[in-house]
Length: 116
Length: 111
Image (cartoon, rainbow over all chains, first blue to last red; front, side, top):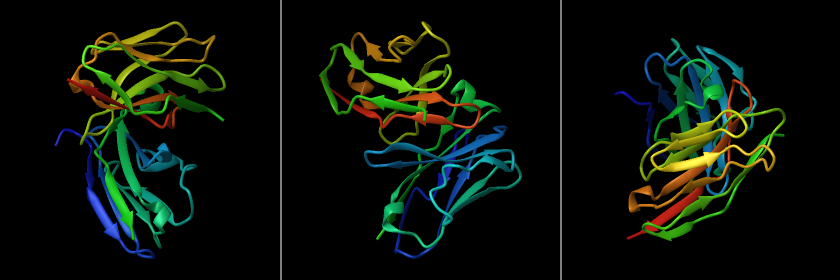
């Protein structure tokens, strides 16, 4: 498709399980971002990729969270040993280089994670 | 650190009413400022932006002016429509790696 694609759109898991969330950015976009949207908390930055490198991972809340990007394209966000406080909508965005400087981020519809 | 504060919602208006959603920011240096909109069931999309003081961003009848003296970037529209019902996010850039977003303001417009 032409936009940012995220999967799954909804994920319900049990506390302690691992989950993987996938993001397929717009073709040609070198920058990729993960954000978390929690009720009443707005958008929380998690990690930024430029190509396959992550020059800024300062927003990852704990070492249970990790992300990778391969081939300068698809990215996977992995949450290990999920906790109830991980429940949120995880948003992926992509842009051309320096997208954050121009504000031109293109967002997917998000993956809603519910941890029981 | 850098931050964005938006008025809490929901903002409830009748069609054709005037809209203002307040946004103020705290930042070191001179950030660029943005408004994003999230329509129901869709991803966030850029609505408008301003990159320096006194710039006015505009799109789809919405406007916002970058006011350095009051550190504000309030969103306005003269006559809202039902189709404007959405969540609006104010944001600023803090370099090349990320945007900092406010908590969002839900707008509900009734016929």
